[in-house]
Length: 307
Image (cartoon, rainbow, N blue to C red; front, side, top):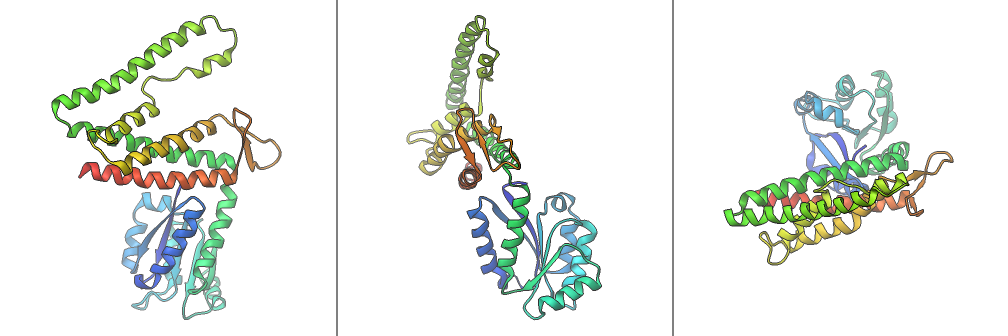
């Protein structure tokens, strides 16, 4: 499971589903997920998507309209989809055909894992299937993986942003940029040397857990923050605020999640971090929402930097 919830959506009337797309996206965002629909308006477009192996592997749900125009019907589309995507939930809907009639078509074509509804009820049906799917995988152990994966994506964007900023600078500014990074490394070296000397006298293995690498993700964030601040080489107040928010609200929680203990009774609904503080599913939902917000800002920043 990822922060991006990928949906294959087959409907020949793209204009008729825009309001539903907005409602579904808003609902999923409230749960800390990004709704990412891939729209296919024809059977040929569907065939093209199904031939993309990477896309097929990433699909989380499928939505199919019954009347696809040009004598194409939804049950035929689902039959083709099932040849490539066998185990993902499908929502089959129609403005003209009742759910009972749709279910009869599902049975005739021997299709499994298909929910049927009217077009009017589509959003509610999608939300219900989404909730059911999320509940199956969204214990805190899985959530930790989602957060770690999403923050790794942000780390990559930070690296790309720094590389782009450096490439855009003049020779003197490039040297200063490198000098700033080197100063952070040298500071870390001194800290590690001091820590190493201290560890020589330690008798408790726990003391060794605080030893870290030299140019950490936090150091890279600090370098990026400096470039974006007022008077920086790439002044951008909005992006600067997003970097600060990520450093203050996401990084500490990410670090805590890397060192939590699962509550042993049953499927975990909370964990306890190193300080003994309980972290609940609701806390994780809020964290996912924050990550979604700042991830979008990092993507926008990288696009701006690349011009």
